[in-house]
Image 1 (cartoon, rainbow, N blue to C red):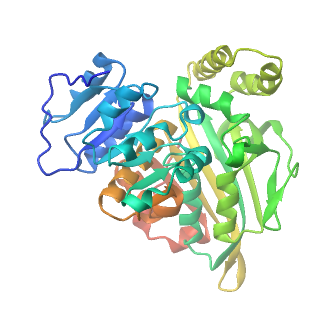
Image 2: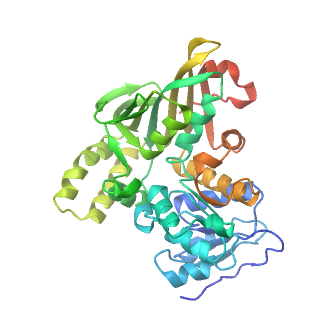
Image 3: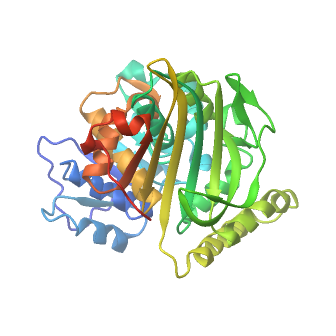
Amino acid sequence: MTRNTMTRNTTTGNRPLIGVLGASGAVGRAAVRELRALGHTGLRLGGRTASALCAVAEEDPAGHDETVWADATAPDGLRAFTEGCDIVLNCVGPTYRLRATVASAALAAGAHCVDVAGDDPAAEDLLQDGDPARDGRTVVLSAGALPGLSSLLPRWLAGQGLDNASALTAHCGGLESCSPTVARDLMLSLTSGGADGAAYGEALAAVRGGRRVPRALRTAEDTEHEAFPGRVALQPYLSGESERLATVLGLDRLDWYNVHPGPAVRALLNLLPGRLAAGDDPARLADRLILAADLDLAGRRPYYVMDFALSGTASGQPATAGLTLRAASSYRLTAAVGALAVDAVLRAEVAAGVHFACDVLDPDTVVRHLRSQGVADLRLTGAAAGAAPAEQVEEGVL
């Protein structure tokens, strides 16, 4: 395929050229706005629908963005899109089918890459092909809400009032629409997405004594949690990112719960493993998941919550610190982290090589951006509430 640039000014002068792949999607469109808020202009917007891309480009008051047809599954289209870019922000999926496809194309074009997903499979592919650090290139993976922010926020919390941390309990979830990419990735995650070809995570598992313990927790199908309105289902789920977080913080215990406020989505999730094993079409199941999310959302305001409770010591005494993040959309959270990762790479704040975002982004910078740009409200409790400066805390309600 040949590059198709449509009625935009493609001149970037001395500014780095940032390519946003999937710029008209739920995450990509928000990421473009976040990049502009960070002062980046003259973006290259890539996707498969010209009219949708042009609508995003028209939001640029200076008119410096360009739109380019690009399809992550078409090698020629990827080459045309990545050519001339200094860095590529990948917002397309499904993640566990594409793996390192976009990052590899960016590296081949001499560009850095940030992927809002990517996870372990992409990292394995990239390192198998040779460390990009040899050519001075940087790839940042899992630069999204979960994974990404889900590890950055606990790291930030650990520095707010505690001398050391020993146990973390996390509850993450919300009520919002389900994009086709998210739906397809969820199907794939049941059999892939983790390290060494394993599934993305393990249901009911937790960290005990600093290591993964299967079936340590139980699901609560109909319960309440103070950070979430109404009745919810709590699904214990331990991912590779969470295990790495436990190691970084030196945690003895970690309990992680995915929270499902919508009964239609939760009912379908319970059926998925059996239906996939029975040979049901994953694409049709993904469509059913999108419809279930819309049904749960009907007449209600969308929201997304991340709630963390960290235990440890402060001044030699047992203490706890809590953090609750409330946002209107997990997609905008993902976009914000992705844009911040791009900004950090362009500022040479991230070393060459393959990294996960939680390992290289500065948690203080991320929290400040979320607050200053109105992306999310943050509420601190316990030791953290007394330690953090007042300007770092904002009370929010659903």
